[in-house]
Amino acid sequence: MSLKFTFRNKRISGILTVLPKREIPFEDEMAHYNFPPAKSLKLKLAMGYNKHRIVEAGTNVSDLCVYGINYLLDEGLLEKDDISALVLVTQSPEHFLPPTSNIIQGKLGLHTDVLCMDINQGCAGFIIGLLQAYMLLEQESIKKVLLLNADVLSQKISKRDRNSNPLAGDAATVTVVERSLEATVIQSVLNMDGKRAYVLQIPAGGFKLPSGPETAEMKEDENGNFRSLDNLVMKGDEVFNFAQKEVPPMIEDLLEISGKKAGDIDFYFFHQPNKFMLHKLADKIGVPREKMPANIVENFGNASGATIPVAVSFNLGADALASTYEVCFAGFGVGLTWAAIQQELGKLKFNQIIYY
Amino acid sequence: MDELFGQLVELFEVESLDSNDNLVDLDMWDSLTQLSIIALAEENYGITVSAAELRDAQTIGGVIGLFEHKKKSRV
Image 1 (cartoon, one colour):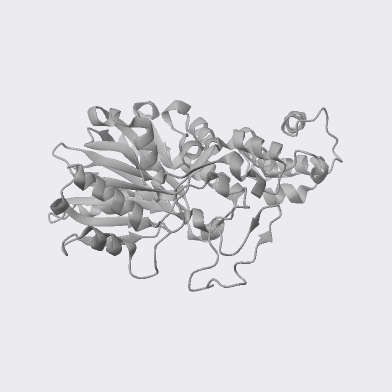
Image 2: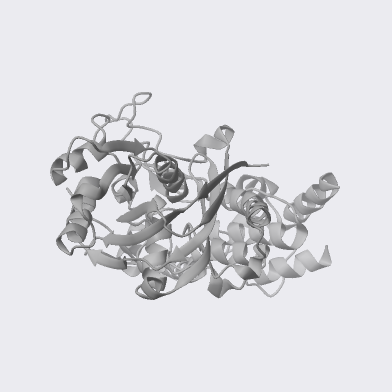
């Protein structure tokens, strides 16, 4: 039982990934953790931790997004006048108000006939953003939607939290979504469960519990991790059980709607929590692990809603300019939200990584 | 449940285990081993256990009892 969406004659025409230049190896941060190095190294191996990309202090979501969009404009890969909407999915907005997408519009000097929209979504942010982009494209006035998935959540993660810090990453992606001249069918399924909203959260810093000296106090949890109420906190075991229980039947559902068998799909580009969880998901769904890339956390870290486009840029690269693939995208996490899209992906105008 | 006993011996990387062994006294008792037991429960036994339930089980015998209880209540 899922909420279902069908879209026709639309496509992704390009994906650009913007990663911070700063790269931190796992070993450099081990001393912060309250665990013997040998145990941390064992965790590294099991989860597929290695190194991650973290922004310099002071770098925000709009910096990464504007850098990426200006790159596309300068390289002639995008025309300013074709941009009808900026859909920014982020959980690290620069302010409560104004929306960060409006700040990006202002920095780019776009005309006023552009829709700017911030969406608060995390792990499933690429799916939610794509759904919004496809819905906008039902309007004739909309030429191209820039879907921006950007987060710099590393600032909210305790360096002494071995549960979250090794896998955290910062990134922005620019996905151009537009109408297709070819007949395409895109299927999607979506579920949300707000009863489990606090499985992943940042307790303080909003209106309900503003940040202050008390919320900044570091406390040790039952596993020996230190964090404050200002930090992101994740119930790792519940996230694991949630994903293993909900994602496989959702994919089965989606494939049935799409009229495809698991083997018809060339790539399963899933959100990237860690290698351990993705391998278990691939096994449970019954697809070869090589069809479900799980190498983003070890190379760059998990940048929330940006992980799926990062995985596409990193794993397909320029191959996606010439070829076309049947893909399945799936995001699961914060909300809790779990959602997936089955569509064609290929003949892209660009699909690459640049560094900020 | 002999099979589970053997799997726990493997996960805790020890020669042998006793039902009365306290989890907190085992060198490998940490969040990674907890996750491995949670994954084992899901994959091999079709049951869902949480880290808190494992902690509350306290001993190896407690973990085995937890698995048995979950398997029964599943049917």
